[in-house]
Image 1 (cartoon, helix red, strand yellow):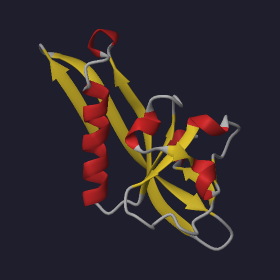
Image 2 (image 1 turned 60 degrees about the vertical axis):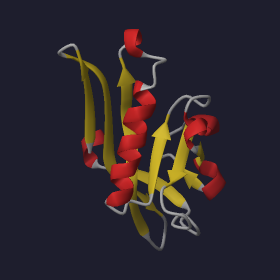
Image 3 (image 1 turned 90 degrees about the vertical axis):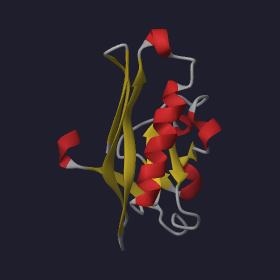
Length: 125
């Protein structure tokens, strides 16, 4: 799922969600990962990144995805409800600072009891 922002005939921002799974010994549970969310420097600080993120979240929820995981800046994403994934006992498949690996539950209660490791699609390998 992708959103591309244009202004004055040029791409000024972009957000992409790809499918991932939370995997543990007894289950696999699908969700999404945001990678990347980017806005040209001249357009930053004007709400474009927030608008892209919120629209992606809205579309993901309509499609019944339960969560979005993010590897991102610890001071930007919490304002949108993202928390360290470790709060749900969910881990990245690689070494990453706890405060930078975040998750947001899109549908209340869907992450309850869903501990495990995020598994990216083979396209990320």
